[in-house]
Amino acid sequence: MIPLSFAQRRLWFIEQFEGPSATYNVPFLVRLTGPLDVAAMQSAVRDVVVRHESLRTLIVANAEGVPSQQVVPVDELVIEVPLVEVAPDALDHAVDLAGQYTIDLATEIPVRATLFRAGEQEHVLVLLIHHIASDGESVVPLARDLDLAYTARLGGEAPEYPELPVQYIDYTLWQREVLGDEDDPDSVLNAQVQYWRDELTGTPQPLRLPTDRPRPPAASHRGDIVEFPIEPELLAAVEEFALDRDVSVPMVMQAALAVLLQHLGAGEDIPIGNTIAGRTDDELQDLIGFFVNTWVLRTDLSGNPTFDELIGQVQNKALAAYDKQDAPFERLVEELNPERSTAYHSLFQVMFTWENERWIDLDLPGGLRARLEAQATSSAKFDLEFNYFADPTKPGMLVYIEYATDLFDHETVEAIAARYIRVVQQLVADPGKPVRQADVLEPAERELVLRGFNDTVAV
Image (cartoon, rainbow, N blue to C red; front, side, top):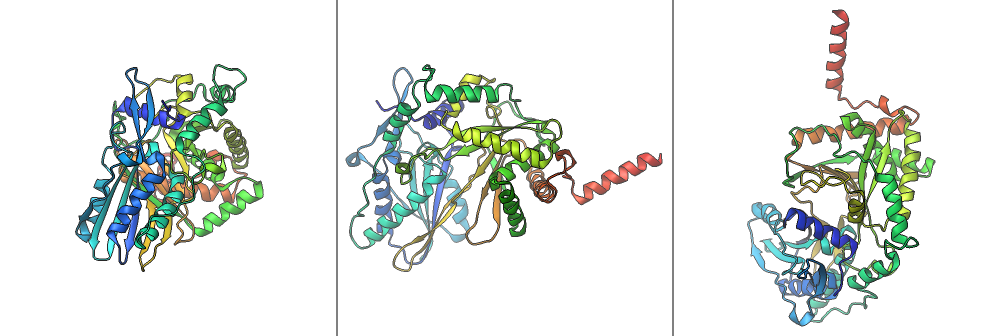
């Protein structure tokens, strides 16, 4: 019996706790323009699933409720890639609907593929993969292997992939061997859990945010997205600021987010969730799988530090967290034992995600242009999730705020985005300013405040 990796077990536990849903679907879209050989693409999808055991693994619990990985043998693998005709103006809706399918991890492999045709030379391949079998870093091997397979199938041949040095179950067993037994005081896992226990004990729950509605007893996980740019000039200023202080751009952006949350009423103790790729060995780079782990960076804004002082704190905590990145998040939740709730995420409700790849252009033969992209969904795992990534077609950076529609209106999150940009601009321009002096008000709001203050003085 092959156990689940720690990351897989976390997601499996959440699904058992909340029930099956599309919340942890990861839809990858391949937008295809030009002459497409449908049969070659259908075969290429199967080739990729055959290559990566993670994409043909069931998660099955035994009579005692203990889950394990069961790899479906290639000769028993059934994967269909139906061709669905759709009107051009209905394509986006069809793609969104495909992303909402709920995969039964115990009876279905964690990938579902649909090829939509919106015109003779306009297609979209939707590869819906459950998060338990993929992560953001999986987009690179997925794109490469699909490219190679389609090219081979177009020529009437099977792809000649280089042999993978390991599969996901090898990583699972290696992970447990390296981390050791938590009950062993000399084990890596014991030391890491102890660090996080000390770091996160007493974390405020839930974080106070300016919601438009009271938090419901159970989160529906319905969500929406607000997209906004970090303009090239501002990004250049942030990069120069980070370089001068020997910190990373994500550290600067997260410190600014903590300041914003304080000004929005979240208090002085700000826990923000982060993801770490988890691919700590070169042999894992070519795998599609779920390696990412979660940590919580707890920012202390008491004492009204300057932004420079705050950046130093964030840097120290991020570097310490990086050295303790293997401790599984769900194990930390068990250890800290916060009150479990279906209303909000444990230990943090705001997530910060820095993505390296979101779009990849594929070099397909026969005049076919293709771009693989990780598609945003209409679900929300957290109250707010700030996703940062570069668009290769544009300068600067894009940010998506995924938000829970249970709590926020679209206009409210648009205002949060605008306030965030203002905070970043001010703190980079004047890092010696105490963080409480950051101005998050829009011009019209500031005018109203000043008018009210003047009226009060006049009275």
